[in-house]
Length: 293
Image: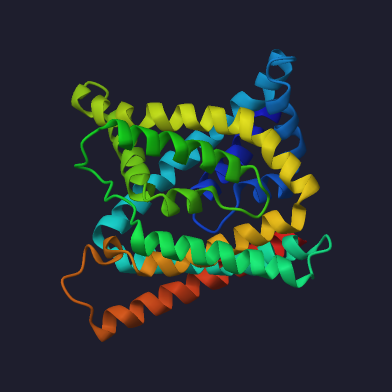
């Protein structure tokens, strides 16, 4: 029963990890497994048996959660790109008060911290305007550049996932690989239903291998770096993250891919986008209050 409950907690954490604006790490704190998770990761090589007894059931639950929700997100992004983007933006916006609370919790009232947030937001917006992310999606040819982006995305997303209050999915959006990641999850679910269809393996492995390697490196190496940053530069780190979230929301609506599935932008479509943005914000705010509790 202990392992079953651990797997169920992993299921919820896995779902949270791929919902932009929702922090899987914070959910781990709520479920009271966060400290044990960090300990198990850091002791994986010194106490492998003990660590794996914790990580395997939790990890299996996370995988099931990711596969379950990833297909739905892929469908929404393909058919309702603006509404899906508005929902994602709302979820991210609703997480900002909680992130600000985390940022200000340790000497975070000084003006220069807000300057850090503004600079981070400007950097993200400028990069989105002048260095647009490549249109990485289903038909993208596999190249060294794409593999490098996927590896970096996996490493940074894994690092973000272990920071309470921060969404790892935001990193995937920032690097332009979120749609591809969700589509690959959908392909994995399809392959598991038809395991003899080996044509699905090539596009799956082309994404899973570099992202997976990045995740492993991100968890093993970046977890220590994140711990140092949060210990020595707690407020500055969270304010930088806060600025990046705001900049990503702005960049999201400036991305042509946001309007991919719509021939024209009508008043009804704008109203629907505003509505789902509000819903996403309210949901994320309520989750933030729960996290604070």
